[in-house]
Length: 470
Image (tube, rainbow, N blue to C red; front, side, top):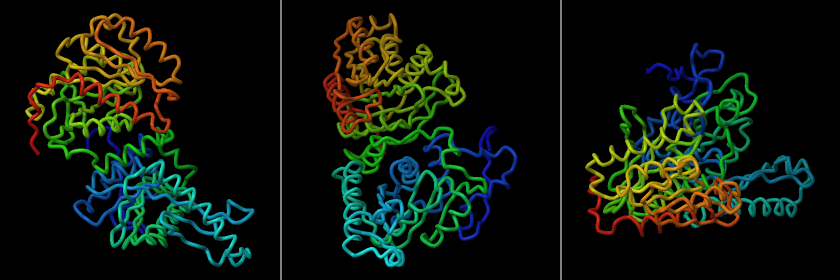
């Protein structure tokens, strides 16, 4: 174990499979990390505990929206399993909507607490009305998250229900019952954290329960995360689209380590077969290679036969110092190192390279493009801060597209001013009604579509395709 890594003490726990559950909080050894950095970190740690399931073709990973989906995506990616959402809604009692008569899922699946229905004297007409209302809510939620993508079949398979944590276990129990009603042969619940009593209560609904942390002292799930910010719908839809593998299957798709002047920066390089360009992403402040918005855009680029390199511009210690995320010189230098590293990869061939920057990453992309001159084919900035590139704007040769949300008023004015200082071919695209993070329905798809069009138009059409091999 490397210095500073979390030390995970694992032993069998009552009603939980041996080797899966973490011991109670009082038994953790000194130095054990008692929280997760974010949902991605939690998902990766959870995936390690589920490693014995890798390679099985009967697994389906079901994330509970919204916060459970980023965790589930990491589990699905590690296991090589399909990812889907499982949306459940409780059926509220007439006049007491907080009291659950049961729960419903998709396609009419549902469970009913018959004893409670009888005890409250709820008529069949009242029950059907409550169920219909819950079904309408489920359909609307599923439509917003999954869109037109087909549901992953559960019949005869093992369903792993994943959330970012469990408080009472009520939603997870309902999800287990809905998964069984959909035909799942076995149902597991896997969560980063759950109180001990909730773990016990889940044992009756699930065949197996996996919990990394199940502390005796439990206030709320969020207390076990450094970053427990809300998960937007756009992140969920991007993760589901990525799992579906939309677009051509990549000829090369692997986790990589970018050598940035002796600094090792983790990333992911994806190159579709016959790709004629590769886009290097520069994430914004407080983000990294796991940015759901950038991953969504990258997936759309893959569908257009464009490769992508998403990597962390800063190491974890560097990112913890807030000043570094605004150090445009440092960030631009990392992009220059990443391009040099990419040029040395045989998978990349001589395919032209473009930059996609977000927030402060937009300024870094422009500053790096100014240094590289005509060696960078195109730049796209999403909600960027080009003003932070300062005088370097006038030195940019690459055709540049600035995309800004119409409701992101301050950043919009900064981009308008920056455009006047650009001497390269450029355009400002404003997405009406969108804010800085493009969380509004459909806004991120507009960004992705504009990026595809810009890169397709400006990456050299006569370049030698990337020669990636599996």
